[in-house]
Length: 206
Image (spheres, one colour):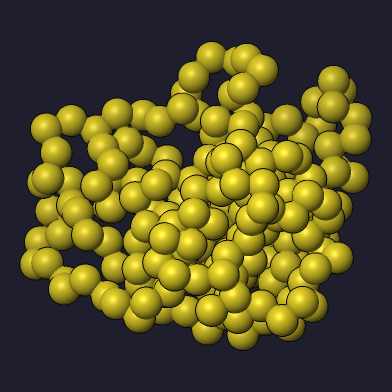
């Protein structure tokens, strides 16, 4: 299967699909940090949407789309924020409308305005649903794909810790926040790449 992982510099999802035997490529305006530049397309992902992909998993920037960022609209320190939001929504919708049979777009919890424009997400998940004891809401907009089935529940952990989105401001904060959890990436590759779904466990969310 030919897989495009849009807006991904970490290559976490790309590598997971490669390990599952698929022809996967990450694509981003930045150089990749995952160690496999031969699997990376550096440039505007919109330029390669029509290159015959079977599946696209996209991670557009959430800064102007997410609920947590809504408080900055109207702040005079950010005079271009409304224009930036319009551009971010247009980019999101171009990904949604790509001529690809199976699409997943992942983003943080969206604002109400974003939902009005791009539609409600199909599924909301947490890394602790897949074996990583951290919190970071993941919203998935799915086309032609089944929702991911969690493999772990709250009862599997003694403690669950906040992830890097609570780390102090710094030059790497934005990049760290954007990285996909490896266990979530592995679940995508296993369930969507190999057609394998884990057995549902009773009381998963207890």
